[in-house]
Length: 230
Image (cartoon, rainbow, N blue to C red; front, side):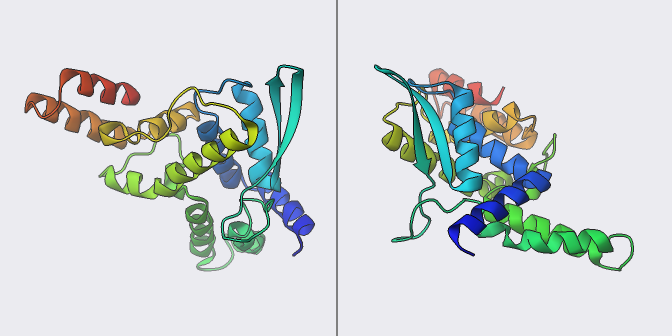
């Protein structure tokens, strides 16, 4: 496909499949997290959504001369690749097979399993495991959640830095934290989108309490860590 065909295809995939739309909205929530100094959160979300889906996002930025619309192309994933390829491409190429699987559901043995396998594969490629897209995401251990969202966390950091540079804006809050609070912003972003990463919060709160009780961290560090998970 040429670039125009990629963009049309990715837009169709985004509009058709709710799980793809869900992931894009999570990224928009993450990149716009806590806002910036030159425009509103909703304006950032709109621009990021378009950038991820079509490869180009328009951002309305407030300058001294008034509001200005700045178009930003999606950064490349590999060296020397041209800018402007949608984030959804080429990960969602397998989505073309989902239509065929849907027609077979309930009629052919193994169709449901194959359908779910394709969906999960696409989600992993986009950086958000499918099992973390429900309204309540609880697993036996928080480590798989943190591992599963490593790519998501990293992508948000890269795109915030990229937009900050291209648009000349400063973010109101730091995204990439360390220590017990490392996944605090991620927890807040998912919570804002109606997804409660309960096991993650419980593990961090328990670990922080144990560290405080053992005098391994100060009361201040404890409070700064747990505030992200309540």
